[in-house]
Length: 345
Image (cartoon, rainbow, N blue to C red; front, side, top):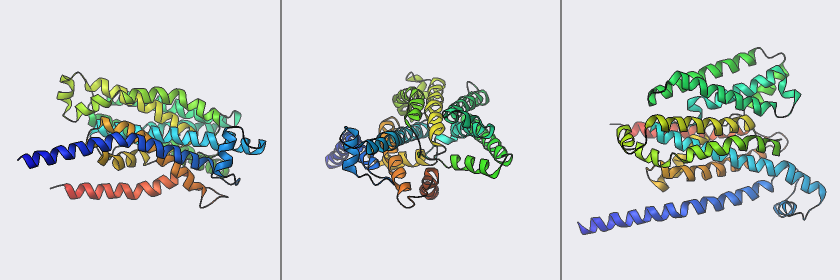
C-alpha cells in the first residue's frame, strides 16, 4: 500500500514538474521560431542581418524588408496562432468535446463572409483596411445571430447546433458570392483569400487586430477556473459559483473578438485550434483551465512554423497557409476519430 502511495506521489510530482517547465520551454521555443521567421524569405537576408535590422545595424533596404514585411508577418503569426490555440482549448474544455475547435460556433465562417463581401462589392479596393474591417463586422453579426439561435438558457448541445447553423448559412452565402463573382479574376481573388495567408501583411493589420484580440484573450483567460469546475458537471460548477450561462457568454464573446479578428487579417486557418490542445494535453493532464496558456503559446509556435514552411518549398509562389494547416490537420483529425472509436466499449 505504501509503495503504491509513493508511486502515486512520484507521478504527481513529475506531472507538476512538467507543468512548471512547460510554459518557459514553450516561450523559449516561440522566441527561437520568431527569430527564425525573420531570417527566412526570398530577399536572401540571413538571421544575423535580420537581427541587425531590428537594432538599427543594417542598410536601409534591409531594414525596410525586415521591419515592414517580415516583422509584422511574424507578429501576426504569433497573434493569430495564440488566438486559435487559446480558443480551441477553451471550446474543448467548455463543450467537453475533444473534437471542438474555433470554427464550430460559426465565428470563422461569419468573419470570412464579411471579408468576402468587401471583395465582391469592390469596397476592399477602395481602402486597404476594408477587408479586415469587413471580417470583424461579419464576426460580430455572426455572434449576435448565434446568441439569438442558441437562446439565453440554451445548453451545450443547443450552442453546437446553433454554431453549425451559422456556419452552414455563412458558407452557403460565401459560395453564392463566388458563384456570382463578376469575373474569374474576382472569384480567384476571393478563393485565394479564403485559403488563408500572412503574406503582404503590414503593421496596419497588427494594430487593427490587437484591439479586438486583447479583450478576447482576457475574457478567455478568466475561464480557467470555471472550465476546471465544469469537468465535474454543470450542477457542480454552478454550486461553486460558476453559472454556465455566464461562462458561455464569456466564451462566445472572447472567441468572437479574438478569432473574428484573426480570421479578418489572416483568412481561414483551419485545424490549428483542434490540434494544439491535443498535443499539449499530455503535459497538463485533464485540467481544461491549465491547458489555456500552453495552448496559446503552442498555437503561436505552430502558426509561425507553418508560415515558415509555406515559404520554403515554393519561394516564387507560396503555398497558402490554410492549405498547409488543412493538409496536416485533416489526417490528425481522422486519427483522433479512430483513436476515440477504439476507446468505446
